[in-house]
Length: 66
Image 1: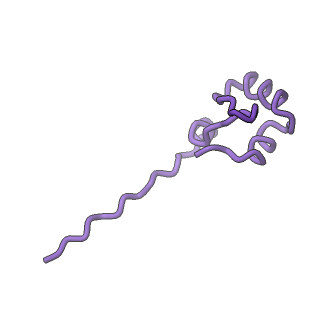
Image 2: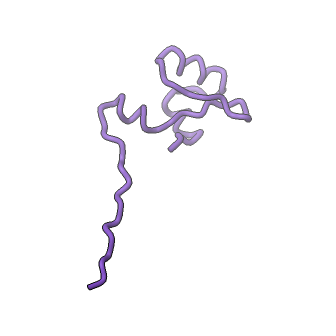
C-alpha cells in the first residue's frame, strides 16, 4: 500500500526527508507526513501515473456444497 523508505529514497534520489518532500512537491506526487517526519507515499497513484495497472485483490469464488 505504501512505498517503503528505501523505495522513497530510490524514487526521489534523496535520503533526507526534507529533500524527499521537495522532490515530491515538484513532481506533484501526493504524500502525507508521518509522525516520524518522513513522507508517506501511496503505491497505487504512482503505478497508475507510470502507466501500470494497480494489482487488484482477487476474490476467491464461493465454494458451493451440492
